[in-house]
Length: 124
Image (cartoon, rainbow, N blue to C red):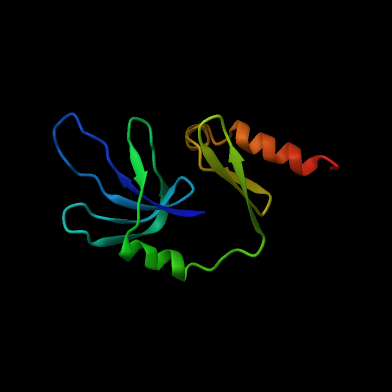
């Protein structure tokens, strides 16, 4: 599931090099540089480490073009999972699960995916 996140991290060295990222799960597809807002498309997607960093969902005209041009997967299902205070989205695609929660970003698994998988396997 593609999403656009603006980094809001306050760096200890006082720099303000926070970019806006187009992410596919935990991998960077493209980003807009904070200095001149130019779009950089990655040939190979790299995993982003979100530890000790803060992000907010945002809109970005240049990065939104990539979302509109990306073909939708016909064999993908998205489930909304409500936690105590937040809601997360679990995506099932080609028998692989991804989740928008922080736990999945760090460990590659989470209780939201477990809950959806168990619900999918139950007869009712």
